[in-house]
Image (tube, rainbow, N blue to C red):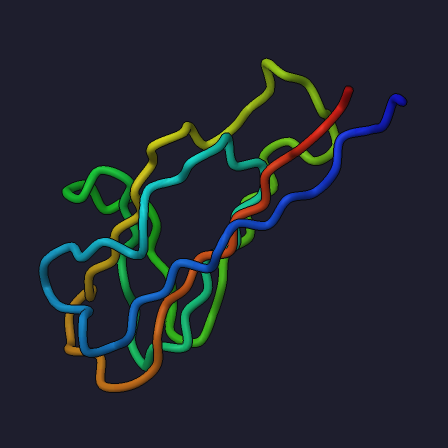
Length: 114
C-alpha cells in the first residue's frame, strides 16, 4: 500500500530560566532526523541568543516571543533544505540575567512516503 509523507513531531526540547546564563547552554538533545519545521519559543523575561555551534550568536530572540523556521513544508523533496541530523541548539542571555520563564524548541520531521 502506498501512502504519502506524514508529519512526525519530536519530543520538545526545553530549558528553564535558571539554566540560562551568559554562556551557551544546550537546549535538550541533538536532532535525530532532518528537521523541516522548527519553532523556537521563549517565555523568558529578557532577550536571548540561539546558536547551533555553542559559540556563534545566530538568532536573537526577544522576551516572550518565538521564531518559526519553515524550511521545506511547501516543497517536499529528499534533497530539500533541512536542519541536519545531530544539530544541537544552545541558548544564552544577551545582557541582563533572566529571572523567569523558559525556552523551548518544537521540531517537525517527515515520515513515510512509500
